[in-house]
Length: 164
Length: 228
Image (cartoon, rainbow over all chains, first blue to last red):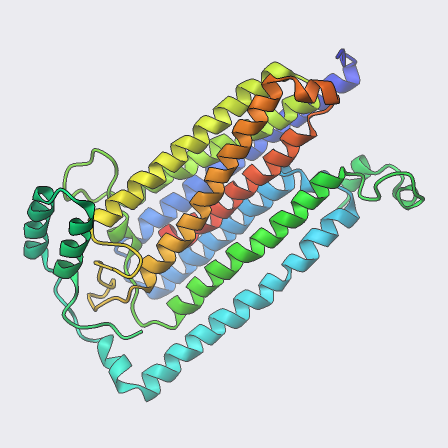
């Protein structure tokens, strides 16, 4: 296969440059996401936290765009093909909005009308560290996997049963 | 989208018959529609996770749950470290897949073979990382129906967190696994000169689409479970 025309070579160089560019963009976005994630650890300000989370979501969408448009080559397809894929995906806008809204509304309703549900969110439970250590020693002794599950689960079950 | 001019010099002529109006091979178009349906499946999982999380008062802190890595000393607190390695493994394997597709377009068999091998190695590395993480969490007492972690505010947590975590990362891991299998089959077919005989490497492009989709889903899973 001798595609050694200068046209072909120019096209190749262009494609390689594009792959390189997108790789760098994806890596940089991921690193920024991770930096933001580390920054959020132990943060108390709810507003700042929400802003960072919003930024992370925007970076996530940007990464998705670059993967689909360039790695999956969708940007270079015929417009009609792009539309048959992208337009149905617009349903996600409604899905996400409606379901998250519904979830948050359900929480508010339960907090208002179900005192037990609300109380559960105020009772602090202790993580049984000592008992966990004892179980660890036990499951090192126990050879079978099955036994491990049971002992670990028993020991780490919180005293207060959570309310779903 | 102005760049479509490169794909279709005369878009009007595409509908005059004799060729695909999408200027694309049938199997590739169908792969796109399959991936679209798969996107809805993953979307349904992730949106139900979001709905349940929004309807619950407390939620475990991901930085407390995912804080270890292989060969780490006990009680180590290294949030995000292991998962960032997993993320980069998948990004790099996606890049090698693009390079394989690119080599296929140039009928460069050696390039396809080299990059497919690298992609398969990346996929297996990712699966190994996930196997380690699942095993680690299992030994912490986490599994479907069992959640040893407390909410970030110290209140008792439901098993929703672990149920969703194992279901969604499991479903994604299964996609990675099938992707690796598909890539291995493509590698064998390349080595057997199947695509040389056909005169095109379109199968590599289709496998590539699937593999990139797996990477795409991980972008969402990673962000939603480990960062938000």
